[in-house]
Image 1 (spheres, rainbow, N blue to C red):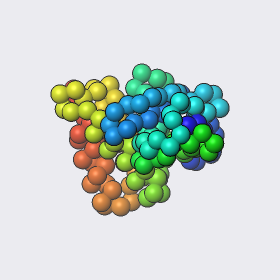
Image 2: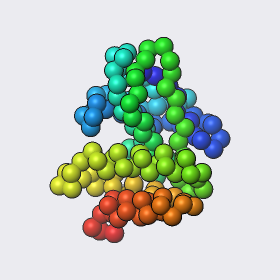
Image 3: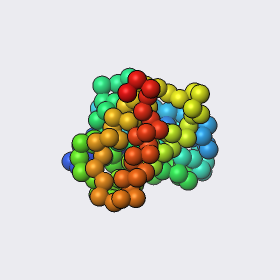
Image 4: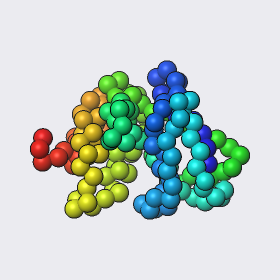
Length: 154
């Protein structure tokens, strides 16, 4: 499985996005995008997986991009799997907002409250807080996610 990750706004490549592949919620493999936004993972062709595109809380770009997740992807050797991410601080069309919120929802489901990834939760709450929604339903989902990700120190 390979492809490119770019910004939805200017279509420029995004460096250091973590591309993670899961079967259910079990991590199969991950890679980071290079300076051209490219990634390459050794996933057997034909496997049905979920692919998550997100920043990593320890990197300089941890607060710059909203995540994206795509479920029921059939891995292929011959067809690139490209993704466009929404930068934080930008107004989002409803489809981009749903995509970003889905990425956060998937991340929230990866761990129980007792094993919560506090550094990720902190950056997620910060990124989510700046996502501008026009839909009342999406605003409600966003607020619930912000509350979920907030760490006790905030």
